[in-house]
Image (cartoon, rainbow, N blue to C red):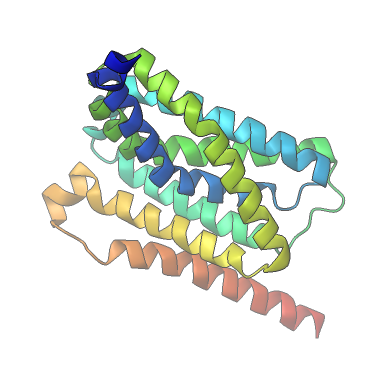
Amino acid sequence: MENFLYSPEFSSILQIIAIDIVLGGDNAIVIALACKNLPEKQRKLGIFYGALGAIILRVLMVFFATYLLAIYGLKIIGGVLLIWIGVKLCLDSHEMNINVKPENRLLAAVKTIIIADFVMSFDNSLAIAAAADGNIYIVIFGLLLSVPIIIWGSKIILKLIDKYPQIIYLGGFLLGWIGGEMIQSDVATVEFYGDLNWTPLFGALIVWATSFLYKLSKKNKNI
């Protein structure tokens, strides 16, 4: 046991757990935002399936991340998609989907989580692959240990959202920022336009402005 504690494998596992604690915050926010309109019983299922999907995607992406990140325009598409998800989650906070069946709401929430996690897994997977040094068993073990962190984080954020609904917009703002960062770091963007350091803020502002204008239009209709 003592030998294992000083082994490269144990060091890699600790690195992956540390990476996932830092990066798992994004996953927790997405899961919380997507599950906020679900009934209490369905929230637990949404959090569980969302966290499970995030981990499975992370494992799969470790194999392909290096190749995918080299594809021109792929991160631009992913960034735009993430900004759209941020907008959608903020707009959904105004529409409680009362007439939609709970099962369909759960399916929609899990689908949103899976798509967002897939997009955000590009860069994260490179960090995990580097820490594991190609050992997929260490990747899987380290990520499985991080599942409780993501689930626990999602539950805490959901409770905060219930108490302070304004947090929804901070979460959407963050997703827009991450989307802008993805666009900024795409190989095509860097090669043709250099360092567009304004794109993260621009992505975040798109989410905020769209949500604000939608809320304003709804308010004017009710007058």
